[in-house]
Image 1 (cartoon, helix red, strand yellow):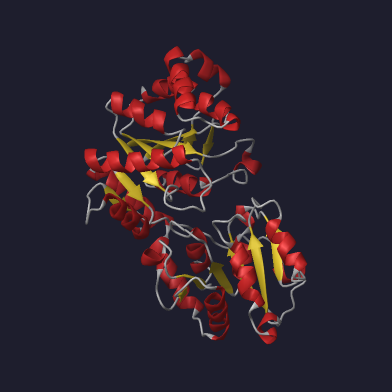
Image 2 (cartoon, rainbow, N blue to C red):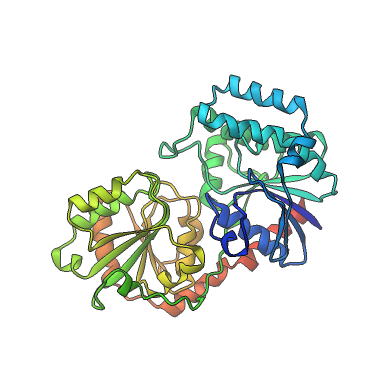
Length: 405
């Protein structure tokens, strides 16, 4: 079997920088490609907008995609499609260069398809993937679309109305025409079925994300790095600082804790800041910077030392397709506190590994943070639970689905 994966959001410079320069949900799409390739499946990978001469990564063949490749395969009709899309959807000026690049690259994509793939695995629905789907349809090439989350059903996702409509129209079309789609959680599937007002559909299949994080012997003492006393517990909140990830509510809930609890807990926020310093300013205003610490982006190869030294994990997102940080924490025996109404709960919940917050008030989140500190957690049991979410199991599920198609 020969699979083409698209798009994977990576920046390729050299071996040492490759794994660090991954954005968006690039970690997960790269893990999917890599884990499938470990099952003796030939996997080629085409980046979304990266210009690269190509490289090998594990067993994946990352295809070259140079400016010459794009220009020599250029088709005026693809440029026409880009202009039509820009006008009809009133695309913001800052997005126009990318829209043009996506579309004029389709000539090269057609050339790549001549390598006779059994299937094209497409990640997400948007301006970059719609042209790919259109070509697969016209050339009768089998394809699978994977949703890593839903953008069109949450006000916290800041994209245009037109982009949200693209996703909803695809969902309708997929159901109507039996297009193969996988989603990363049962919660996402339920949202889709509710939107379609149907009880079931063979079109949308759940394949949970996987992860394999292990100690890499990276010499980093988190307590020393952030001046955390040995008597204090460490809680992690992993994910880019954003409205959707809702770190600001964690700050508000922390304020409600008794002083005795506050003195025993430090929360580390890991991730890029997409809020223009809003969270940091609020923490400084409240004079809590020694208890609520913004760590910034942590390289993936180093993040395991944070989980190793943490006591708890917290997810306060407004929406969460699956919750990769939850299963990453599982691998290190770290329990998670999260809201009961998150999509990911259906697939992840076990009373011995997750503490659920029944409503979204600051008070209730504060109370459950306190409960988490006083509960007895069995790290060995949590690690055992993590085996359900290995990359190997995820790859097997994808391959079985490929064979069904």
